Image: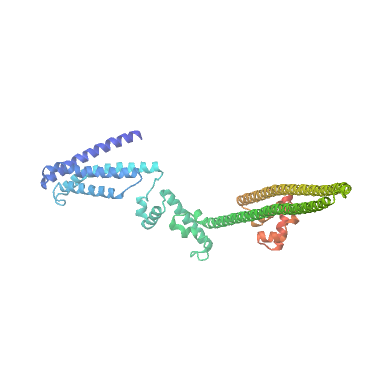
Length: 494
């Protein structure tokens, strides 16, 4: 192979050189004859080198995966032109057939070498890209032109790159048709539609096995779509339950805040009432003390007035007595002593009365002080009750906070439990999907999960609940529960 490669490369280069040299000479002379002048030296290079340049550009685009068929058409046009020009350089085409053929053979060698190189590069490129493609052989076109065209059309339309693969597909379909005719007759009217699929899908390039597998693939696709729809509906149900749980939690939080506000308002009302009651008691005691003080003041003023009146009367009597004594000095000498003694006794009596009045005032002052002490004691008691009410309010707030925290923790645990249950349910559904279980087996496992969620007691899951969950009759629900109990007895755990 190495020797053949070297020989082909050297021989191809020699033939290309000879062809290019001969073509250059012929086209140069033809250019001079047709008045090209000095441009005749460049004209052959433009034509022959144009073929090489266009084919090289075509190969480069093929290597880059962006072929442009126009380049190859232009290269073929230049090839036909150079062959014609070389043939015309020998004179009229029909006037000298031998000379025409001799001049035409030279560019044909050059073009053949270039096309061979292009074919090699294209084939290597397709092999490297994994797109090696065979064509329909010439002998088949000659022997069976109609079927060959149909085969060629299918190969190009449906990307069948291997001619051998196309032959195998044609052989399979032919054998399959013969077998169908053997079983159902020549016209195949009685053959089922599914069995006719390989012949119907022939024009799409499908094999017999691929065509026969189409119904199963369609059924499998429908089943997968149904399963995806069921999974989506299950997820939607889980999301709906989560949203409902969030709404319920929001309602509970709102109710808790309302209850807390009620406690706060009640505590504030009790505190305000205690303060008002204390203030009213203090005001009442103060008013009573003021009234007693006013009464004591009035009594003291009356006693003082009575004392002054008594003093006035005594002074008047003494004046009358002194006047009488002046008239009767001698006679009343003895009586003066008596009157003096009487006056002293009267003075002592008045003094005693004044002392009694003062004692009465002191007693009333003591009562007033005692009343003030009682008022202060009531105020202290009111303050103590206010402090107790505040402590009770703080304790109620703490209890309410603890209650809210406990409720929040319970709601959080309930939400986590629902999430775990939903996750377990989803994993169980995925496992059942992977195991391709029947609807009855799926229903039994779902009821088993419901029993486990209810604490393991089958009677806790009623037939009505199973009927609503599985959308089945009561008899079927009873059977599903019995199957679920059997599954749990054998150790089923999701």
